Amino acid sequence: MSIFKRLKIAIVNLISGKSPVDIEELENLLIEADFGVSLSSELASKLKKNTDVKSILTSEFNKIFNGYIKDIDTFGHKPFVITLCGVNGSGKTTTVAKLIYKFKSQGLSVDVSACDTFRVAADTQLEKWTEKLGCKLFKGTNKDPASVAYVALNETESDVLIIDTAGRLPTNKNLMDELQKIYRVVKKIDASAPHLNLLVLDATTGQNAIEQVKSFGNVSPMDGFILTKADVGAKGGFIVRIVNELHIPVFGIGTGEQPEDFKMFNINEFVENLIEE
Ligand SMILES: Nc1nc2c(ncn2[C@@H]2O[C@H](COP(=O)(O)OP(=O)(O)OP(=O)(O)O)[C@@H](O)[C@H]2O)c(=O)[nH]1
Ligand SMILES: [Mg+2]
Image 1 (cartoon, rainbow, N blue to C red):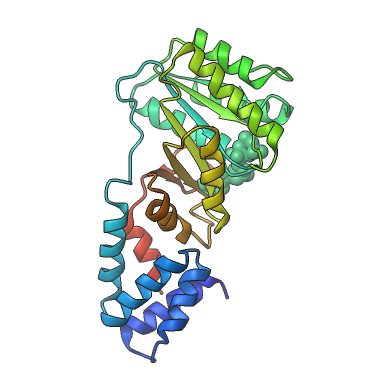
Image 2: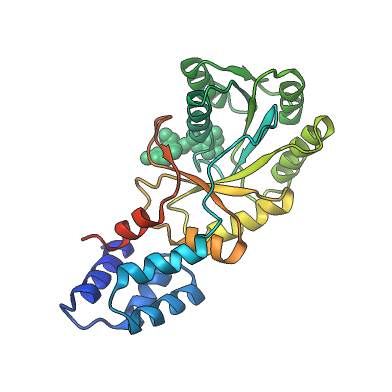
């Protein structure tokens, strides 16, 4: 049985008073669901004193997320430059499609820079989305990714430029240096860019997410993160932990593989998901 399923059962039991709930067990389940040790013990001790679990969790999360749930806005910059980074397969390219869709539905024009230049499949994947959603793609198979970003930012006439990067592990120094170069080159053209540097995190990642935020943040400060695969992610407690410990905002969650499957993080829904039977 999944951690979340067990967590739900424990919480439902606590709410209904059906069976005595072991608070220590609840705390362990929260830890296993990636809420982190200190937050789990804090939440469990609050839950011990009060049986209205839903309102306790909602009010605790409201405190933690206060000011840290953000919508993506271009704040009047043109071009508004967004960089997406993250580990392999976290959902960056799919998120590009979601952001194009979002901006286009606000009447903004969007260009994309394909900075995953070493995999032919990466270009094909982005091409599919940019053609479908009607925007220009700057690409350069086998070229230095930073040079593709440079040309894209120099030439774009659109309201928004989204820079998709290749998946990489923070432990790979060469690939992290390559990412650093993309930021450096972008800054040469516009010192204020990227205006939004986002880490794309897979909901099934678990505790490692904290390390990812720190490591990618060392290359260029993270303005926030996007959680993908919230529709399949069994875990997700780490979102609370990231915001609580690292104080960076969540700029949206991916709920499927299509461009429209993107929305703002919602505390009530998150709590509902935790406690529903
Ligand atoms: N169910 C679901 N699947 C998703 C979501 N986001 C991405 N995916 C799927 O996850 C897989 C990887 O997504 P990509 O967007 O290619 O990930 P990436 O980070 O660009 O991958 P690399 O460029 O290889 O590092 C694809 O099969 C996507 O369709 C989501 O929110 N929900
Ligand atoms: Mg990709």
